[in-house]
Image 1: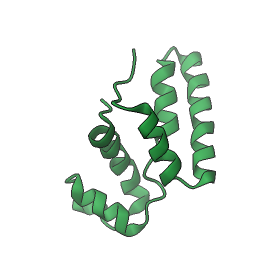
Image 2: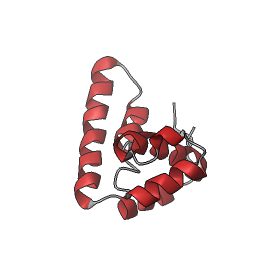
Image 3: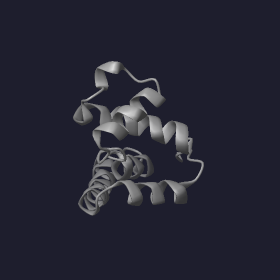
Image 4: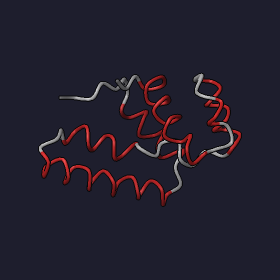
Length: 102
């Protein structure tokens, strides 16, 4: 089953632009491992690859950027000031709202 994403090239550019090089390399490694695990467990390798590659899309936002995205997407105020917890929710919102990922 394929992933619905409006513009993969734009998404990749976004990831490269917003992630530190070390975090981007980490995400590529997670993508590789996710594909291997999908093969072992009979899961969808394309979905696993996508999730692995973009799981940290918001990880390197500073406090102001993260809080702005929390407010923009109407996420729980409990996430404000808590980047470690918020990055996954903000990342999912970015993927959905900015890139049409469903």
